[in-house]
Length: 296
Image 1: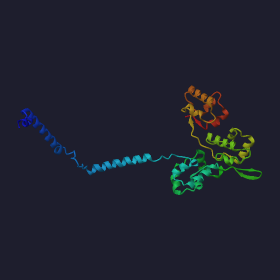
Image 2 (image 1 turned 90 degrees about the horizontal axis):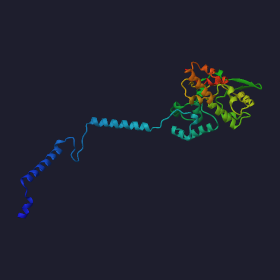
Image 3 (image 1 turned 60 degrees about the horizontal axis):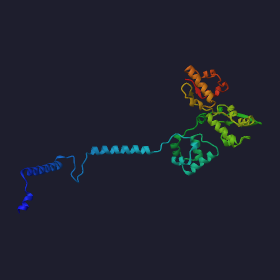
Image 4 (image 1 turned 60 degrees about the vertical axis):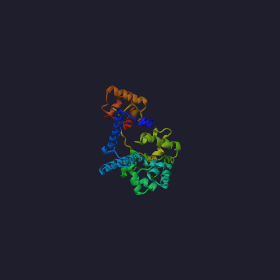
């Protein structure tokens, strides 16, 4: 027994320590269960006010809406003549409608208006209403669509047969190949040169197409002439960069350098006619160059 008692024998200091430890444990347990109302007991759920729950739900819904909007594909303005089969599928066109458009394009023909697009493809009015706001046509096509007066049609005669000339800015490569002396390469070269100019402003620009003889040009002009002149967004020669001016038709590197040297010398061109004062400026091209340039 004495040996057993020795294991439970504590001095006063040790007993005080044990009591202090027990008291501390009891105090912490009491704080845990009764003194921390914001902390849940094991197995219990915190009930939040309905206003807070509604506010959280609104924030979640708002974030979901933003994320859904971000994932939606953005639609930029496009030329309907160049819709691919994949883009047509994305826009909601059927396979049959897409094939009609591709065949129309393969024949060297273009779309010139929303109604023309519907006529070629056969899309419904509802789909056209969704697609047409994003249609973007070249400037010279827009000008032609706005012009509906008969005065824009040139009537000529050959061998006592009345010929109604068509627009040189709308003729396709396929149509040009019908003219004697123009093959596939020449027809594509004419269309490509027209695109580089953003449209012809006069019939005489045909003579600038490499490989076109005067005889062939005469045959072209028997059927076609410039009816709808393109409009251009002119470049301010006083603020334009060297590369911007160099990219313009009829202006090469040497002429661009002369223009900028002159601009540095006078600080600012007061009138676009000052271009004529530049030494070595091609005066014969002045009327064609100022189509793309202005001085402000």
